[in-house]
Length: 299
Image 1: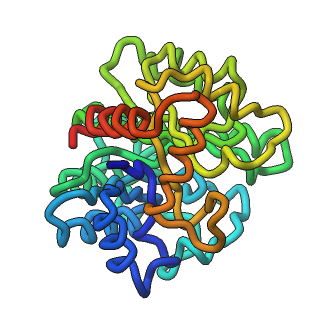
Image 2: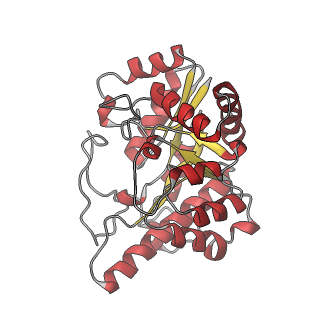
Image 3: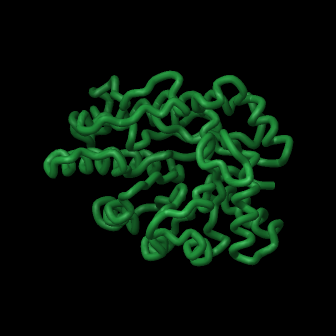
């Protein structure tokens, strides 16, 4: 058995055959977690999983690329959105915990996501985090842009704590800032926060800091690529099997030898590659990482 801990079958790429893809995976003993990226995809994920008695779960969260900062133009991803392509805009600026100002709440509708997160089979908050791939060019706007992402991240971490749910972290070109937030602004050492660093692309030093915080590390098809300054093989060797989760991030990052749209069934290629790098029997790798996912997400 394997668990794809990060899939997006709630995305536009599967609008015509999501059920077929899911059932093909379940028939081959692959479970999956459908990850939300904004309210619409989170709601769709929460609704989709209700028709399956077991093996399919959902998460809810606001991805940093969907945060309405009005400071940067985001390229539309047609694989994700059938349904809405712009940065998310909160509709209920008057709905927020007393600890948040109205201006902070206008970035993230805490109560709306909280209600959705309490749906049956929603097992985590995510994917949430920081993403500096698209960013403003001026120093002043960049600082404002980063601060808005940090504010919304901390609100979602508070939501995870309130509901006692793990977090799926997205981080691109921002690991040092995320580590600083978790250690200082959010003070993770004083919380019961737990989670996974999804699709980790960072240095070995950054990896060790996340491991020291108690997080799991998610590996997906990106490990088959070459990225300057990143040694995936070294990162895999430096992460104990008991802290590894497998994911596809489908429809993206299709692992070789497959081509085209990714799907949960292809998680086996990631698992076998990591078993090869670690020189550990595939069945042992599958068993331990499956238990890791069950432990973190309480499934």
